[in-house]
Amino acid sequence: MSLRRSEVTMVNSSWTEGHILQLWQKPETTFKVYPACDVRAFKELVRHDEDQERRSINVVSVAQFRPEKDHQMQIKAMKNPGTGVVAGSGWCCWKREEMNGDRERVDNLKELSRQLGVEQNCIFQVNFSFDTLKKELVDGLMGIHSMWNEHFGISVVECMAAGLLMVAHKSGGPLMDIVVDDEGDRNGFLAADEHEYARVIKSILEMSPELQERIRKRARSSVDRFSDQEFERNFRESLKIVLS
Image (cartoon, rainbow, N blue to C red; front, side, top):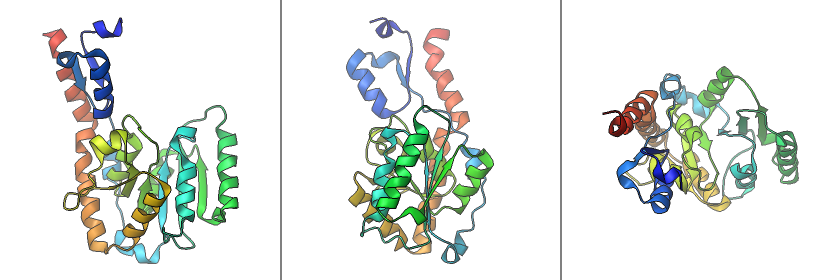
């Protein structure tokens, strides 16, 4: 009840906003303020996509190794016959911080990749530097995100800012705020299960470099609304009703 008495409520996405409005019913003091993301650091990365035919196909997943991130589905999608991912492809997973039980989860994911016969294609990177992350993003063709009903999805924004062709879960923040999955305005792709992920990944691999580049440019330009500067502006705007 005390939270309902707050003078200002900030929510981090349209998905969260819907829940808060349903619970508290205070639209006049509820403001959507997207989380701050240093998109400039990722947009400044120089890509060499014209050389992609001479490179392996790298699909990059940026997330903590937590159960809700559903890395299992990513590995199963890679094994799915509909994916069309060829030998030599890389599936890179990056984790931001150490948490209890994470090492065991990584070991379990490695075991799953062995059981499915894709262990040569899965690279599990744990706690590496920001510079290494940027290199992985530059070398990647696609980004993949598989958490159901994530409130926002900063890793999705980071991958898009870096120029990866993003495949995100069709729910929560990625669906409602970040990824446009409509032809003509597309800046990324959405999927809900391993079969959809497989189909989307296959369609990206079959795209012409020109179409890939158009989607990539839309993605990189679309993330400016999630910048540090936009966060500061929206944060200040939300506080006007109590500071004026």
